[in-house]
Amino acid sequence: MNNEYLYELIEKAKRNDKGSIGKLLTILESSPPEAFKLLDIVLRETKSKAHVIGFTGIPGSGKSTLISKLLSFYKKENCKIAVIAIDPTSPLSRGAFLGDRIRMQEHSLAPNVFIRSVSTRGLKGGLSFAGVAMIEVFDYLGYDKVFIETVGIGQAETDIMNSAHTIIVVTMPGIGDEIQALKAGVMEIGDIYVLNKSDKEESQKTFEYLNFVIESNELVGRLGWRPKLLKTSALMNYGIEDVMNAIEEHLQYIIEHRYFDSKAYLRRKLLVKLFIEKLLIDKLELEFERLNIEETPGLRNQLNVLREKIASSLKELELYI
Amino acid sequence: MEVIYTGVRQTPEQVVETAIQEDVDVIGVSILSGAHITLMKRLMENLRAKGVHDIPVFLGGTIPLPDISEIEGMGIDRVFLPGTSLQEIVKYVYDAALNKRKKKHE
Image 1 (tube, each protein chain N blue to C red):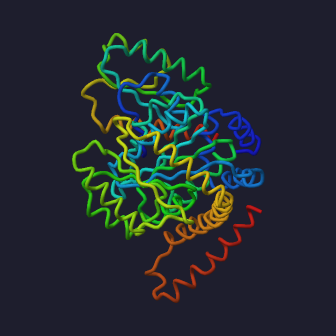
Image 2: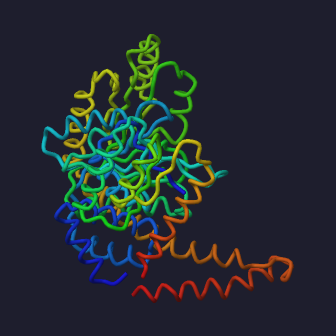
Image 3: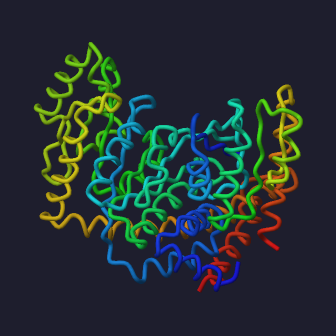
């Protein structure tokens, strides 16, 4: 790909040409040299403005449907919104079936909405990189909000959630045991907890339990923000406006506490690290595949073989400069 | 291979817009309603109007044999009829995607 073509894509993407945006995102997923050129431009010019909102929660809790309903509200506000929907992939079949879009297709023709599905496969540990880079590109292109949806398991998804200003944990009734896990594990991160499917019978019990956990300060919000607990039924279109108000309230809070800009700063710093990591890991994996441990028995010998390869991969970084 | 599934009852415009935002290699459409001529014509016109010429489109469903030549005349790459083996379709998609990527790099 020549530079002129890349610059042309960027210019068209700035004018919200969806095809060009789509192609830029593909570059981030699959082509490090072009991704480097693109991000070099992006990180030079942007003053970060986009509000990044992460949606996480167990499969089936209704994240996609909730996002779709929120899009309906935000569209009325003349807000430009990007959605990055990350789906986990079976490591066995090595294929991916990405179905998050099904719930959001009513917005597919909206000029101010862009939806992209991302699978964990094919990115070779580069999911963190692709996800965080996509946030930067949408920010650069003038999107006001970036929604990211993941099931929130694994390091890559934690990286991505850490890049969000506002984190929404979506849960549903009748999962008492899971709430224990939610307190202890990677999910202890929500700024807003949404009890979705609250039209279900057992919802009041789950709500009270969650409420107790929050009241007793077992779920500590970030930066003194008290986590909010809201009831919704995304399917019945109930409680959605409350979620939107809570998101905006949290945004005001983090702006007032000067947290908004520092988050963007940290995100960009993370991106630098992830990019270099990706380059080195890609190269290293290639060398590992070629390594024949029968020909060079002993860890010392194997390290010796790889040492030179690692040194040459560091040299390769110079190609980018 | 990654499949982005949009769910049923999509308009041709929705299919085209989704393909563009997801930057796909191949578009596959299933139609069982009998409206294949009208819908596929609209889909192909919309795709060309958006300046897309390099994404192969294939169709599967209950398509009467006499309609096939008209559909292929619209620029649709392949038509699969009921009873086609899954392997045959997968093989086609694989080759079509690879072919598209090769052209892109030329």
